[in-house]
Structure formats: structure tokens, C-alpha cells
Image (cartoon, rainbow, N blue to C red; front, side, top):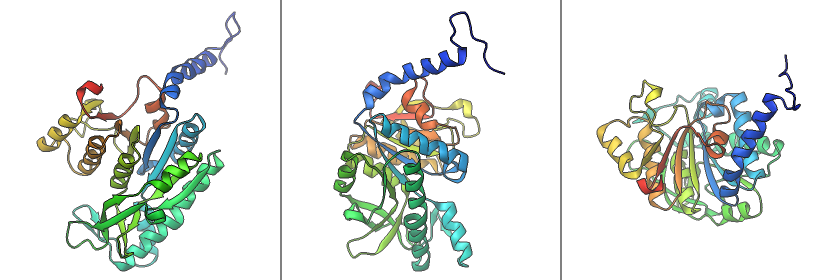
Length: 299
């Protein structure tokens, strides 16, 4: 069944599409030429339908002049390959215990499989994607994580973003896996949220967007209606101290706060399970998820 055409010959569905495009125009004009760092992970990476929509969203962003940079992890696929190789995944305080054998698998999966799959999908969607990891062009220098007993889990010591800036300026979409090396060449597995936040700061990005499996920052983790749609650094830190932000949300909010403190325009925590979450956030008046800014005056 199709929409009946009114007397002026314009279907309601067509009028709605035009309205959506019109609403997007000022956002396209505002963010054209600006860098947006997207951390891609969670259900949106595992579900093939959601994955195709995220890829199309990123390709759309590039096609209207926004400069997307993609950072990804790939925990579920790492677990799959560890199982195939008879290596039992182990975690300590929420971090993957990464011995030498596990690090080999992490690098193989993130750099060799997940990264190249995303590059291929973006290219098929009309983008011009190039795959990198933290080792390329000495993009990221790593150091051992402070938590003892987790092996080759790293933190970011330094970001040298020249190669990413050059690719973006040339019209490419950099796709970066969260593997880097220290000054001796030892590889480390780094949390993808951390890499995205530090990279966004080094690129002076307009936005940092983290795709997650939650609606955003919630006052009550069990009640999606308690979503906090806007907050500043001070409020975010207070929510962590009060325990409102807990568990796996702490490192996400912390990396947003750190990136904002270093000059990123805004940070967003979005539900990647929502189809076209990126477009809804960037190009509509309503937006979704939680937006963090440096101060209340930025609202």
C-alpha cells in the first residue's frame, strides 16, 4: 500500500523525506570540513544489518564534507579466534589478560581481519577508506598499563597524528585498530575508547562519538527513561564520584572528559543498536544519546 497523493501531487512520505533533508542542511554546513572521530564497537560491530547502516552513515558523512576518522576494537572476534586456537580468554578487573600468544592473536584479528573488513565495507559504500594501526607512521606510542598482571595491555603515551591528518586532507577515511607499540617495538593492546579519545584530542576534532550498547549515561542503569542528554565535565566527574556512572561506563565517560579537557568540541555516547545512530545525532535537531561538553556555557 502506498501513500495517497494529495491534490498537489506530493505524497506525505515524500514531504517527510524533504523535511528531513532540510533539517540536516544547517548541520552539514556547520560540520563541513570538521573532523569527527567515531569509536566503532559493540552490537553495531557484531550485527551485520547494524554494521551496514553504520558503514553507510560514515560514508554519508564523508560525502557531505565531514571528515570522519574511525577507531575500532573487536573483542568478540578476538574471543572467537582464541577459542579456535585453544587459548582460553582471561580477564582481570575488566581488562583482557594479554600474554605473548594472546597478543599475537589480538594483532592478527584487529589489524589483519576486522580492520580490513571495515575498510572493504566503507569502500563498497562509496567511501575511500585506508586501514591503519597505532604502529603505522608511529601514530601511537604505547606504554604498559598500570594494572599488574594483565600482560601486554597498554595505555597511550604519545600520539603523532600526521599520517591521519594527511589522509583526511586527501579525502580518505582512516580506519584505525587499537594496537600500538612502545619505543622498543613491543606490541600492546589498548582500549579502543582510550585510543579514540586521545586521537580526537590530537586532531582537534569537532566531535568524539562512542558507539556503545547502552542508550547513553543513565541516572538509573535499569531505566532508559533516565537518560541524561547533556552534561558538562564537572557534572560528569560528579556522577562518577557519586557512583551514578559505574562499571564499564567509567572508562568511556573518563575518556570523553579527557578529550574535552584537551579541546575536543563535544563528546557523545550513543546507542549503536539504534539504526543510523550517527546520522540521528549529527544531522537532526533531536539527537540521541548523551552529549558531553566542556562547560554549561557550551549548551
